[in-house]
Image: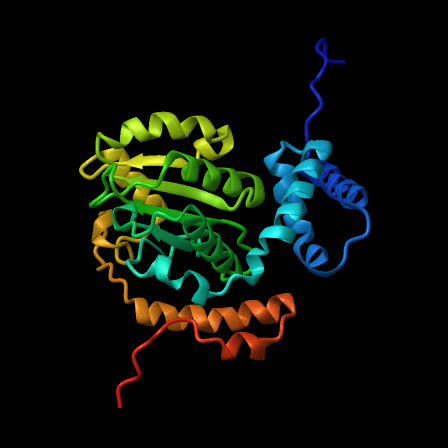
Length: 285
């Protein structure tokens, strides 16, 4: 007989069973759901909220209830491209035409191309693209990657602190565990002043996913290689590809995705299809 007590081991199957039990407990706590709320609250969704709150069922329940209330009033699934297309004219936020090494959707942000002072417009545009990115995640993938290019950024083009705080709140509280990594690529020194204020609104889990990346820095290069293929990565982020934003072509893709969104949520596709989203040039003959 051993002279020492052995510490009980946490077997993976036991952990999985305990977490499945918490998912069931959270679902029971939510009570009967219907319509969009039922569609939204998949087991995977409940797991994300539990993960965000360290598997504390009560805290996850409160968080999810607040999201359901927010979604019922903000109605992110009803935003259509024609409503936010003007915000996207400069390509300040767009979905990349490539994925990261794990096949996840990539959003590219270029804050130097900020073209609007409207807090609501900026938020609705980003929420629309978040919903679109989630819709286009490959099967089995729950998260996406963000690449933020600071070329041309200045305090004059920066969004107000309050808008940044509101965006962070929405992302953290209503899209938990959706971010795999956020790359802040070559931010200028002046950005540090803005970051010193904004970082206090970022929770610890999100904070750990935010990476400051600099050209010609060995650790930065290794980090980028681990997440992205250099052949796909735009040169603005140290890769070999060319980053171009064609607003008309991107608009066509978003219009197609609006129909996919309508089908997913059970809306009338015809009503979505007949809306004129943006003024697009006719196709070449």
